[in-house]
Amino acid sequence: MTQKKDKNGLTEKEFLKEYKAGDYDRPSVTADILVLGASADLRTLKILLVKRDEHPYLDRWALPGGFVHGDETAFQAAQRKLSNETGLEGVYLDQIYTFTRPDRDPRTRVMTIAYLALVSDTSDDMLRGVTCAGLGEATGGVRDAAWFDLVIDQGSISFTNAERNVSIEYSIENKRFKNGRIFYENWVSSLKSKEELAFDHIEIIIESFIKLKAEFEHTDLAFNMMGDTFTLPDLQALYELVLGKKLYKTNFRAMVAPKVDATGAKMKSISSNKMSAEYRYKEAAH
Image 1 (cartoon, rainbow, N blue to C red):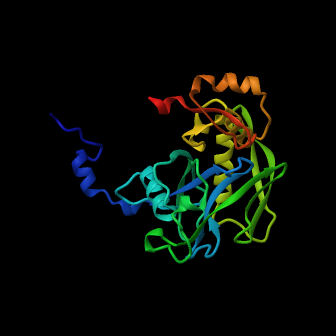
Image 2 (image 1 turned 90 degrees about the vertical axis):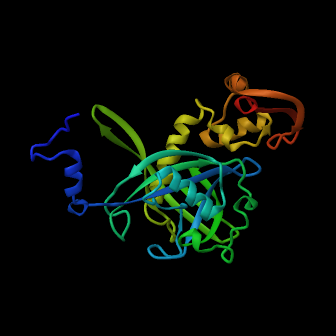
Image 3 (image 1 turned 90 degrees about the horizontal axis):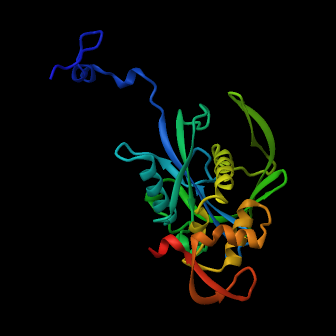
């Protein structure tokens, strides 16, 4: 088979042999992960943050993440960093967006691919007892990992961990942007508290949460944030927590009916504190 030659008379093999990667900018690539769940009482969203143990942003709280190695995909890097920094494995993980602002990292040009991870357990036990004393070299510059209350009110977004006496708050406002002929709204943040998140991680959190809200009501994502079995009142409470609005009981149950199976047993509902029929995610049963 005749090999094609380019305008310089080179075959692809010859071209690659002479190719000099150093002639072009080569930005580094990282994977950052927003790990999201709900509190045990289903009243508050929980976000996992790690405390940085190295420059830049030494001692700042950040999303777990790190550099993508040459022999792995960004998805594999996200899985690796989650396991190393937090002990989380086998959780739902989905790509959100690629952040490429030139000045987002003071070290060099670093692009990051952001992922959203959804979990059903936000207890400290889920972190395998990750503490300042227990973190090793494999964590890659992280000295602590903790669940923070994520509260989104009208005009603000905050991250609070009472045990560590940390409260980080940003103002948010809706702004309109144009893309082609389409106008859309997005949140723009500005810092309100003395402490702030590292890098541009507030932007990653905002983009991830907006995407989650847009998809949550019409997909099965909620079941990644529930236990193996649950009650319908608790499932509805989770939907309302993420969506930030009340749902009509009849309409909600009609919406989730094709997605759940009754186990025939009963369990105590977290949200109503009453015994209720027990259900499980239908796909998980097959």
